[in-house]
Length: 297
Image 1 (cartoon, rainbow, N blue to C red):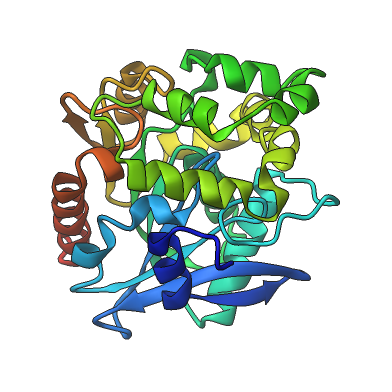
Image 2 (image 1 turned 180 degrees about the horizontal axis):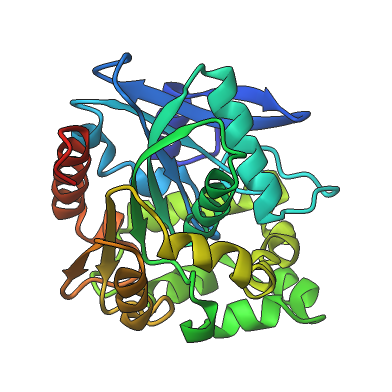
């Protein structure tokens, strides 16, 4: 791991590896108030929990924050024999919180993580989730997949050409692709961190498998969307409205169907709000979660 960028090495040193269902999963568990209801962060595709490194300082000032890299992503194990199903990713979240003794949580989810959150909320409605949900924040995820505008790379990865595509992938191409889905250009440091973690442990070759979650968004639409229409906890839909993939129509649809959801539009922001507007995102999430704790969500 010595060849990882300095910011990723520092991130690694702050966390630890937890064995869950036979896999080594990177976890960062931090915050000023270990006894407070934690904020659990669910990251997106194809990156990692490091996407939240710019908002974590403020979010962890007043509460415990738990982040993990899903298997196949970031610093976690990237097995060749794994389903990469959103259901298994949700299983690991439940196992982790059980191991940490967490019985109640606020959820903060981005991109693919919003679908993991949907699976957790579907289990909650069925009485199958042992963790109490206190509030939910959904950011720039294509939960309503029928409205999403997938990138050319995502489309190729879902075809038989996906394996050839990843063999031809490079850091230069990756950087260009990421810059096309944001409005505020990502820094060289953040792009280097993204690529290094994607490439770590041969993660690039896992992309044709890990992107299988997109198909699950279609397949399990009727499992995940109805529970949102009956969600009875404070919910904020926080969205970079210039996102060309998880378009603002998705945010508007979610806000209209989730009872009493608060829609916050981030003007001039694309797909990665936590990196494009970290101060504003941190303040909004911090204020929302604090309000939910006070019963003012």
